[in-house]
Image (cartoon, rainbow, N blue to C red):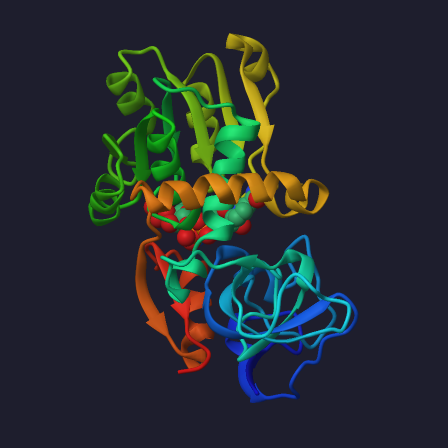
Length: 326
Ligand SMILES: NC(=O)c1ccc[n+]([C@@H]2O[C@H](COP(=O)([O-])OP(=O)(O)OC[C@H]3O[C@@H](n4cnc5c(N)ncnc54)[C@H](OP(=O)(O)O)[C@@H]3O)[C@@H](O)[C@H]2O)c1
C-alpha cells in the first residue's frame, strides 16, 4: 500500500509517500481502508518530535480517519469487514490502510460522508470536551474564541452556539473572520489590526468575557485572560503560536478566575465513556444542522506533507482532508 512515511524527527518536507507492507490485525485490532483522513495541527508536531506522543520510527502521521473495515482479528466481534467507521488512531491515517484498536472504532453516521467523518472527532471532540465538561459553559454566557478560523476554533464557535452561548471570534484576517461569522460568531475581532483588550471591553461594555477558548497561546494569552469577567474561565487548549505563555498567578486570584487545562486525547483514553457521550451529542447536532466541518480543500497522499507544512505556517483555514485512495 501507499503511505506518507516519517523516518526521522525533523522538518515536514522530509516526509515521503512510499510503498510499504500492508498491516495485518493482531489481537483486538482491525485494519481499515482509509477513505479520508483530515489534517490537524498535532500532525505537524508529531513528525518533528515535539508532540506528547512519540511513535516508534518509521511511522505514518495522520491522527483521524473515516473508512471501511477491511479485516479484523479473530477476537473482534463488534465490528466486521464492510462496516463504515470513524477512528482516532493518533497516527497512521495518512496511508491507504490503517491499523486501529478495534475498541476505538465508532460507526460513521449514515448521513455523514467520509470527508466529513474524518474531520469530526478531534476538533469537535476537543471543543465539546473543553467547553462542556471542563469549562461548564452556560447558555447566555459570552465566549471569546482565539484562532477562531482554525480547526478547533470553528468547532468551538459552533458548539458554543449550539449550547446557547454568545461568541466573539478572534482571528488574524478579515477573510478568516468572515468564515467565523458564517459558522455562527455574532461579533469578531481582527487581532492583527485591532487592540484585543479594547475591543473586548467595547463588546462587553467593560464587563469582560465569561470564558476564553485559547488554542493559540503566545502574546494573546495574557491579554485574553485579563479580559475575563468575575469568575471567568480560561481554557488552555494549545500553543499554535509556538510560545507557551508564562502567566502570573495573581491574575487567577484577581476576579477569582480559573485557568483550566484541556487535553482531549488523554481524557478520552482515561474516560472512554465521556468520548461516546460527546460523540452522541455531536452527531445529534450534526443531524439538526447545528454543526458542520468546514472542508476547504481535498488533497491526495502526495499533497499531504505540503498541507501539514501549510498548517504549521498559519496558511490553512478550516479543514484540509487527505484522500489516500485517490
Ligand atoms: N488540548 C487538546 O486536547 C488539543 C486538541 C486538538 C488540538 N490542540 C491544539 O490546538 C491548536 C490548534 O489546532 P488546530 O487543529 O485548530 O490548528 P489550526 O487549524 O492550524 O488553527 C490554529 C490557529 O492558530 C492561529 N495561529 C496563531 N499563530 C500561529 C502560528 N504561528 N502558526 C500557526 N497558527 C497560528 C491561526 O489563526 P490566526 O492566523 O487567525 O491567528 C490558526 O488558524 C494546536 O496547538 C493543537 O496542537 C489541542
